[in-house]
Length: 111
Image (tube, rainbow, N blue to C red; front, side, top):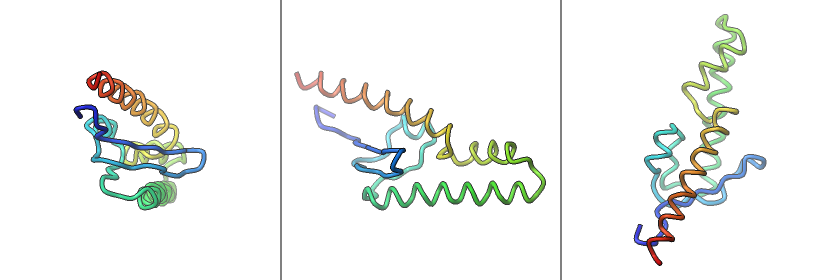
């Protein structure tokens, strides 16, 4: 805001690591139902993301044990936990585009 970043988030999916987590969750992130990592260090944010993914895997196993097919279980879990691929990937890319537009707007405002 006023040329200052309000949110910086950097995540490398190939490494499963958060490199930067500055500022509060944005409205765009909330609309995409991404996990709220506000106030967490990059290490803690990484650990939280892994915990969410693990919770999803455990729930998926419970659903399969309860009689759902693996595909049905995966769909149900993906609806509840948006960190599961490929849904997270699509939402993350949409978030990245929205964040990039916000940075460009902030940079233009300082000129």
